[in-house]
Length: 302
Image 1 (cartoon, rainbow, N blue to C red):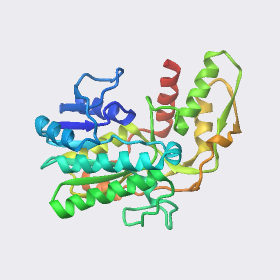
Image 2: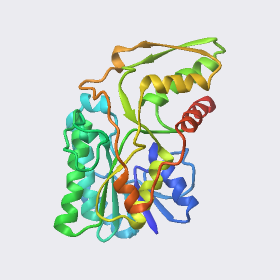
Image 3: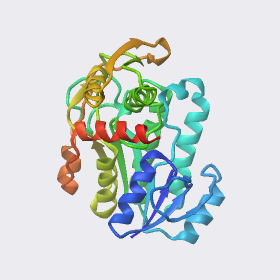
């Protein structure tokens, strides 16, 4: 397939680009990082410019589209809710409107569920987003469903729970911890005090390289609908810090940083990937401990 990725310069976009190259697909990227892991054709495009999106997609004529581009920081969404909602929803509208007959994966988030009424959370769970970012993703998810129902488009709305791995910015919890440990190792310290948020909050973590496998499988064989991408197991921030400490010779301690505490924190959530597995055969394959090691090693290499 010829696959167009929006957000190809991002963390997950880079991993998807690598996976597409490994599996023999043709790739066109919207946006490109100077450190992109593979060489590919790319274009610079403002996804808020509907006419430009329409003409670019018509020229590229992709068989499939992975719409990953988004303002993805929960913390930043509190600072600029209007910008987050506009950027994430309007870009999704323009992509879906210009997609034509191409299969589309809309990259959503498990954040849209909010506080779970049952565990594990499946795709029938109500949407109760607890921050502006999650609201924008819930709206984009509904927009994808609308384009399937009203226009007959093949849109797969993914709801990826927390994912991490090498290359992720330190705005996110695992990378933030890993960077602090890697910096302390580089400084030849014997101890590091990692600044953390709430260590009791539990999330469902998956390797980003497993997540992009799910995206491609859905583009290849998925039917329109909503799909959780998750491990099915929740881990606390304390579990993450312990796993990183096991990979380091340092004495790892922590202290709470008030700036890292979240408003409206959901204390425990994990999802079910049964619907995705039934549709595509997908299962998470990379062990949590391996992703922890790879993430820390990536920060060491920086």
